[in-house]
Image (cartoon, rainbow, N blue to C red; front, side, top):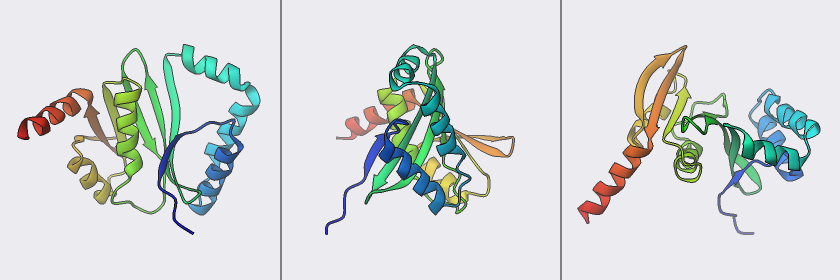
Length: 171
């Protein structure tokens, strides 16, 4: 049987398969289960139509993305933002093991800047995760320093545009 390709999904709290995948991911990584519980509460408090209407009307952006590979979640993150300020924070799943790279961060950044039309993306990681710090810096994220035991990184839309121009100019 051939391996399936990776695919990026926007979490649909009303999709039973998404809920099962998230619960399985939490169990596999010994996570608290708070995320799937919160989605369950949301699902039980609003109809899908009310939820979609609220997402459309609200200034707040509350979205979740996950990478699926071989019928399992490989990684996920939460995006919390403000439409009027055109900025967001990307909060990757709090995995116990330190990661050198987390593709979900760069995919979510691209989604936030290019699909949601935001201008600034902030990432918070723990200071002991040196490998992920190096990965973010190599991907063009700016280290803004430490705040409340987290290292804050920034990626701006303007930086992306400037980098694309430089690449095009080289050819």
